[in-house]
Each structure stands twice: as C-alpha cells, then as structure tokens.
Amino acid sequence: MKRELGIIGIGNVGSMLLHKFTELDLIKEEDITVANRSPEKLDSLEKKYPALNVFRNNIELAKKCDNIMICVEPLNLPKVLKEIQPHLNENKHIMISTSMVAMKDIERFHSGSVTIFMPTLISMVDGGITIACHNGRVNEAEKEFFESLMGNFSEVKVMGEEDINLSQNMTASFPGFFAEIMLEFVKAASKRSKSVTDEELEHMLLVSLLGASRLLLEKNMSFEETISRVSTKGGITYEGVKVFEKMLPEVFDAALEASTGRYKVITELASKEAAELM
Ligand SMILES: NC(=O)c1ccc[n+]([C@@H]2O[C@H](COP(=O)([O-])OP(=O)(O)OC[C@H]3O[C@@H](n4cnc5c(N)ncnc54)[C@H](OP(=O)(O)O)[C@@H]3O)[C@@H](O)[C@H]2O)c1
Image (cartoon, rainbow, N blue to C red; front, side):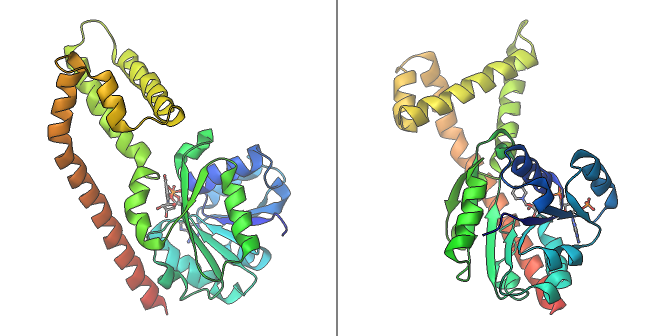
C-alpha cells in the first residue's frame, strides 16, 4: 500500500499529525497533501514544508488521495463529507479525527472504509493513546497503514464506538483535565508558600508526576498499592489522601457527567446536520 495521505483541516490536530509524519519520516513530504478552510495557514505551511502538496480546496484533495484524514471540528464534518462525497469510492479510506460524529452518520456519505479516531496532543512528545474504531469495510492493509502510522508516536487502542465517549476522558481530554487539577493544586500550595514560587511548585509537581507515572507503569504497581506504600497510617500523606478519598468521587462523577453529556449533545447535533444535508 502506497504511503500517501491527504489531510483536511490543519488546526491543532492536523498540524500535530503533519509534524509527526514528516519529523519521523513516516510519509515523505511530497506524498502528503493538505487543505484547510482559511488560506493563511496554508501559506505558512508552504514556507515550512516546501515539498508538501498544498491544495486550496477539499475536492481536489479528495480526487487525488486514497487515504484521507479529516481533522475538522465535529459540527463542520458533515459539510466537508458532503462536499467530497462525489469523489469518494471503494478505494478511499477516510480517517476522521473525532468520534463525536457517529459512524452511521459518516456512512451516509461514504460506503467504503472509515476509521474514526481520537488522537491526543500528548503525541507531540511521542506518547499518549490514540483511540480508534474501524468500520467493517476497513481491510487488513488499511488497518495496518493506520495503526502502524499512529503507532510510531502513540499507543493505538482499538475499541468499539460505544466505549469511546467515556474512554477519551482518559486520553484526548486528559491533558486539559490534568492541567486544571494541577493548577488548583498549585494555587492551594501557593497560598501557603513562604518563598517557593509558583513556577517552582509547578516544576516539582510535573517532575513528581512524570516519575510517579513511570514508577506505577514500570514496577506494575496499582494505585491502591502505591497509596499504601506512601501513606503510613497516622502520617502526613495519609491525612491528605483521606481528604481526596472523601471529596474527589463527587468531583470526578460531575466532570464525567458533564463531559460525556456534552459529547452526546454534539453527536446529536452532528447527526441532525448530516440528515439535513442528505
Ligand atoms: N485538540 C485535541 O486535543 C483533540 C483531540 C482529539 C480529537 N480532536 C478532534 O479533532 C478535530 C480537530 O480538532 P482541533 O483541535 O485540531 O481543531 P481546530 O484547531 O479548531 O482545527 C480545525 C481545523 O479545521 C479547519 N476546517 C474547518 N472547517 C473546514 C472545512 N470546511 N474545510 C477545510 N478545513 C476546515 C479549520 O480551518 P480554519 O483555519 O479556517 O479555522 C481548522 O484549521 C475536532 O473534531 C476535535 O474534536 C481534538
């Protein structure tokens, strides 16, 4: 299978993927074609990647490429699919960087291979998990193309579409959740600090977090085991852990309710939009 690819939508995700594919030499620059709504971004890409094929419209890209990644916002996706639909055929593998538009709605526009995936911006530093779901038309070569490509800078986890809404909170949404939780931790510590600065507090947290993740993953330690090893009964960590244990379940329940609820609303809106375009 030829390593060629078209990317529609060069925002956070599209540009991160383009950067990884070229930086790691996974696909040659001249075998990548991009298109984006606003032309300004394309102008700067032309300067940065001289051999890249930069197209000013999605239709030309759809005609040229058999492997097409679409990295636009969920509510813009139906319109993009409608626009390129006349140029899609059985040979085209469409890979969509959001699972918030249901597979059944994407299949209204393309009866061939579709992969929906949830990338993560953690992959900018070669890591994180890409969640993926293939429809029944995706053949082994297409699966291999997608999974090995993304596997170069992330761990690819294939799952059923129905599991993505919840799971993506642990992957794609995680950097945002994590940043907010850490920000609150720093703010609380900052109020009590005598001379340690916010930057120093943040640095200590980040280094500890990186180390804690490695400790648990590499030593195969569970969360429970870690808590019992670090927090001796009657000790200082133990007192803090008890507070987290009491107060966090409510916070995490509410955050997951809000996030998964919004996901459902967007999926319904995109479904309505797709139906109206038929
Ligand atoms: N950000 C994340 O961490 C993350 C993680 C997982 C999944 N996702 C999903 O990935 C998708 C992209 O997210 P993002 O953060 O990259 O969004 P973004 O930064 O807003 O980028 C979206 C890009 O799509 C372009 N676009 C919109 N409509 C278009 C059209 N009709 N034709 C061509 N290009 C069009 C936009 O062009 P303009 O330059 O005109 O705005 C923009 O460059 C979303 O569906 C999101 O839910 C994002």
